[in-house]
Length: 181
Image 1 (cartoon, rainbow, N blue to C red):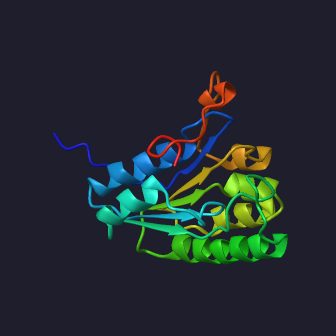
Image 2 (cartoon, rainbow, N blue to C red):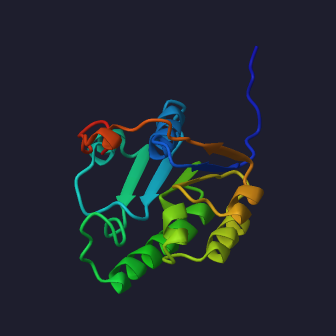
Image 3 (cartoon, rainbow, N blue to C red):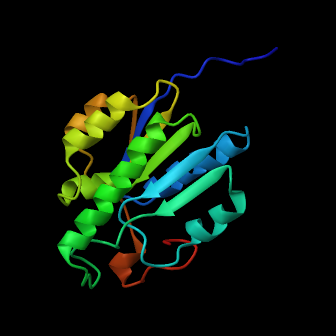
Protein backbone atom coordinates (compact mmCIF):
# COMPACT_ATOMS: atom_id res chain seq x y z
CA UNK A 1 0.00 0.00 0.00
CA UNK A 2 1.45 3.35 -1.05
CA UNK A 3 1.59 6.09 1.55
CA UNK A 4 2.54 8.88 -0.84
CA UNK A 5 1.17 12.17 0.35
CA UNK A 6 1.29 15.66 -1.05
CA UNK A 7 4.00 17.70 0.62
CA UNK A 8 3.14 20.85 2.49
CA UNK A 9 6.31 22.83 3.01
CA UNK A 10 6.95 23.20 6.71
CA UNK A 11 8.80 25.85 8.67
CA UNK A 12 11.02 24.05 11.16
CA UNK A 13 13.05 25.63 13.97
CA UNK A 14 15.85 23.89 15.85
CA UNK A 15 16.91 26.08 18.76
CA UNK A 16 18.15 25.92 22.34
CA UNK A 17 21.43 25.86 24.24
CA UNK A 18 22.15 22.17 23.64
CA UNK A 19 24.14 20.59 20.83
CA UNK A 20 22.49 19.06 17.81
CA UNK A 21 20.68 21.84 15.97
CA UNK A 22 22.83 21.81 12.84
CA UNK A 23 23.19 18.04 13.09
CA UNK A 24 19.40 17.60 13.09
CA UNK A 25 19.02 19.83 10.04
CA UNK A 26 21.78 18.01 8.17
CA UNK A 27 20.21 14.67 9.12
CA UNK A 28 16.97 15.85 7.55
CA UNK A 29 18.80 16.77 4.34
CA UNK A 30 20.53 13.38 4.27
CA UNK A 31 17.19 11.63 4.78
CA UNK A 32 15.66 13.64 1.93
CA UNK A 33 18.61 12.74 -0.34
CA UNK A 34 17.58 9.11 0.12
CA UNK A 35 14.36 10.01 -1.69
CA UNK A 36 16.25 11.90 -4.41
CA UNK A 37 15.17 15.26 -3.00
CA UNK A 38 17.51 18.23 -3.11
CA UNK A 39 18.55 20.40 -0.21
CA UNK A 40 20.64 23.50 0.23
CA UNK A 41 22.29 24.44 3.51
CA UNK A 42 23.31 28.08 3.80
CA UNK A 43 25.52 28.65 6.83
CA UNK A 44 25.11 32.19 8.19
CA UNK A 45 27.90 32.15 10.77
CA UNK A 46 30.18 29.25 9.92
CA UNK A 47 32.45 29.67 7.01
CA UNK A 48 36.02 30.50 7.88
CA UNK A 49 37.23 27.04 8.88
CA UNK A 50 37.03 23.46 7.68
CA UNK A 51 34.11 21.47 9.09
CA UNK A 52 33.26 17.79 9.02
CA UNK A 53 29.81 18.48 7.64
CA UNK A 54 31.25 20.54 4.81
CA UNK A 55 33.68 17.78 3.87
CA UNK A 56 31.16 14.93 4.07
CA UNK A 57 28.31 16.73 2.33
CA UNK A 58 30.51 17.39 -0.71
CA UNK A 59 30.17 13.63 -1.28
CA UNK A 60 26.38 13.96 -1.47
CA UNK A 61 26.44 16.75 -4.05
CA UNK A 62 24.27 17.47 -6.06
CA UNK A 63 21.56 16.15 -3.73
CA UNK A 64 22.86 18.39 -0.95
CA UNK A 65 24.60 21.71 -1.46
CA UNK A 66 26.31 23.43 1.46
CA UNK A 67 27.39 27.05 1.29
CA UNK A 68 29.50 28.39 4.17
CA UNK A 69 28.51 32.03 3.71
CA UNK A 70 29.53 33.51 7.07
CA UNK A 71 32.74 34.99 8.37
CA UNK A 72 32.86 33.01 11.62
CA UNK A 73 31.35 33.60 15.02
CA UNK A 74 30.68 37.27 15.72
CA UNK A 75 32.50 38.84 18.68
CA UNK A 76 33.54 35.48 20.19
CA UNK A 77 36.30 32.90 19.73
CA UNK A 78 38.96 35.56 19.00
CA UNK A 79 36.89 37.15 16.24
CA UNK A 80 38.91 39.92 14.61
CA UNK A 81 36.66 40.36 11.58
CA UNK A 82 35.14 43.86 11.35
CA UNK A 83 31.41 43.79 12.11
CA UNK A 84 30.63 45.33 8.70
CA UNK A 85 32.20 42.25 7.03
CA UNK A 86 29.98 39.94 9.10
CA UNK A 87 26.98 42.09 8.18
CA UNK A 88 27.79 42.02 4.45
CA UNK A 89 28.25 38.24 4.53
CA UNK A 90 24.92 37.75 6.32
CA UNK A 91 23.11 39.97 3.84
CA UNK A 92 24.66 38.04 0.93
CA UNK A 93 23.54 34.78 2.59
CA UNK A 94 20.03 36.21 2.99
CA UNK A 95 19.99 37.02 -0.72
CA UNK A 96 20.95 33.40 -1.51
CA UNK A 97 18.18 32.23 0.84
CA UNK A 98 15.60 34.37 -0.98
CA UNK A 99 16.63 32.81 -4.29
CA UNK A 100 16.57 29.29 -2.84
CA UNK A 101 13.07 29.52 -1.33
CA UNK A 102 11.66 30.79 -4.64
CA UNK A 103 13.50 28.19 -6.71
CA UNK A 104 11.95 24.94 -7.83
CA UNK A 105 15.39 23.35 -7.45
CA UNK A 106 15.21 22.46 -3.72
CA UNK A 107 12.76 20.63 -1.48
CA UNK A 108 14.59 21.67 1.72
CA UNK A 109 16.30 24.98 2.46
CA UNK A 110 18.33 25.06 5.69
CA UNK A 111 19.39 28.43 7.07
CA UNK A 112 22.01 27.26 9.53
CA UNK A 113 22.69 29.58 12.48
CA UNK A 114 20.23 32.18 11.22
CA UNK A 115 18.84 32.56 14.73
CA UNK A 116 22.30 33.68 15.89
CA UNK A 117 22.46 36.05 12.93
CA UNK A 118 19.16 37.62 14.06
CA UNK A 119 20.30 37.84 17.69
CA UNK A 120 23.61 39.37 16.58
CA UNK A 121 21.87 42.07 14.50
CA UNK A 122 23.21 40.71 11.22
CA UNK A 123 19.71 39.89 9.92
CA UNK A 124 16.36 41.40 10.92
CA UNK A 125 13.63 39.08 12.20
CA UNK A 126 11.32 40.89 9.75
CA UNK A 127 13.54 39.70 6.88
CA UNK A 128 13.23 36.09 8.04
CA UNK A 129 9.44 36.44 8.40
CA UNK A 130 9.31 37.89 4.87
CA UNK A 131 11.38 34.93 3.67
CA UNK A 132 8.82 32.56 5.21
CA UNK A 133 6.01 34.40 3.40
CA UNK A 134 7.78 34.30 0.03
CA UNK A 135 8.83 30.64 0.07
CA UNK A 136 7.15 28.31 -2.35
CA UNK A 137 4.38 26.30 -0.62
CA UNK A 138 6.16 22.98 -1.19
CA UNK A 139 9.54 23.97 0.29
CA UNK A 140 10.54 22.96 3.80
CA UNK A 141 12.44 25.82 5.48
CA UNK A 142 14.67 24.91 8.42
CA UNK A 143 16.01 27.62 10.75
CA UNK A 144 18.75 26.68 13.23
CA UNK A 145 20.60 28.37 16.06
CA UNK A 146 20.01 29.28 19.66
CA UNK A 147 17.91 32.28 20.67
CA UNK A 148 15.12 31.79 18.12
CA UNK A 149 12.87 34.81 18.08
CA UNK A 150 9.44 34.24 19.65
CA UNK A 151 7.98 35.58 16.39
CA UNK A 152 9.75 32.87 14.39
CA UNK A 153 8.72 30.21 16.89
CA UNK A 154 5.10 31.35 16.58
CA UNK A 155 5.27 31.18 12.77
CA UNK A 156 6.92 27.74 12.65
CA UNK A 157 5.09 24.45 12.13
CA UNK A 158 7.62 22.45 14.14
CA UNK A 159 9.95 23.69 16.89
CA UNK A 160 12.46 21.57 18.74
CA UNK A 161 14.51 22.98 21.59
CA UNK A 162 17.81 21.28 22.31
CA UNK A 163 18.48 21.62 26.03
CA UNK A 164 21.99 21.44 27.39
CA UNK A 165 22.20 19.29 30.48
CA UNK A 166 25.91 18.56 30.48
CA UNK A 167 28.72 19.62 28.13
CA UNK A 168 32.40 18.56 27.96
CA UNK A 169 33.42 22.23 27.77
CA UNK A 170 32.41 22.48 31.44
CA UNK A 171 35.32 20.09 32.18
CA UNK A 172 37.74 22.06 30.01
CA UNK A 173 37.44 19.71 27.03
CA UNK A 174 37.75 21.72 23.83
CA UNK A 175 35.74 21.24 20.62
CA UNK A 176 36.70 18.06 18.77
CA UNK A 177 36.74 17.10 15.10
CA UNK A 178 33.80 14.95 14.11
CA UNK A 179 31.87 15.78 17.28
CA UNK A 180 31.72 19.58 17.36
CA UNK A 181 32.75 20.59 13.85
